[in-house]
Image (cartoon, rainbow, N blue to C red; front, side, top):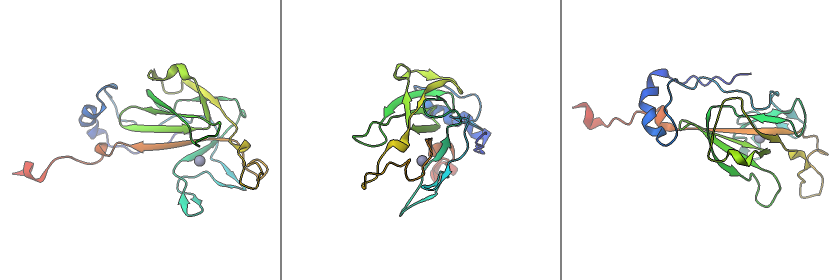
Length: 175
Ligand SMILES: [Zn+2]
C-alpha cells in the first residue's frame, strides 16, 4: 500500500531552505512505504482510520495491523532522520520514534525502536524496530485491550511542515 499525499512538486525547491540540518530534497515526497505491510485496523474497539471517533476526540493517525504478528519488523515509511525516541503513554512500557525529512514528520507508536538509529538517517523501507503488543494495555476495569477485541497494530501519525503548502510571500512584496 502506498499513501499518496498529492504534494505539489513546484514547491520543492523552496522548501529545501526549511530542511537545514537534515538534507536537501531533490524530489517531492509523493508516497511513503507501509511500515508493517499490514491493513488498516478494524476491530471491536474501533477503526484505525484517520479521524475515526475516539469518544470526544479524533484518531489522529492511521493504525496498521501486523501480518507477521507482534515482534515483526517495522520499516521506515520515508527517508529521513530518526529525530527522537518517544513514549506514547507516560509510565507504560510502550515505545515509538519520530522520523523526519524536514517536510514530513512521521511518528510511529507501539514500536520498540532500534535505539542505535537515533540521530541517524534511515532509508525508506529500512528496518527501524519491532512491533510491540499494544493490546496488553489494560482499561481501568483491569481488562486488557486484547480481551476487548483490539488487534495488535502500529500507529502512524504524520505532521506536514505548513511551509510546504503556504507561501510566505508578504503582501508588501507585490508592490
Ligand atoms: Zn492509532
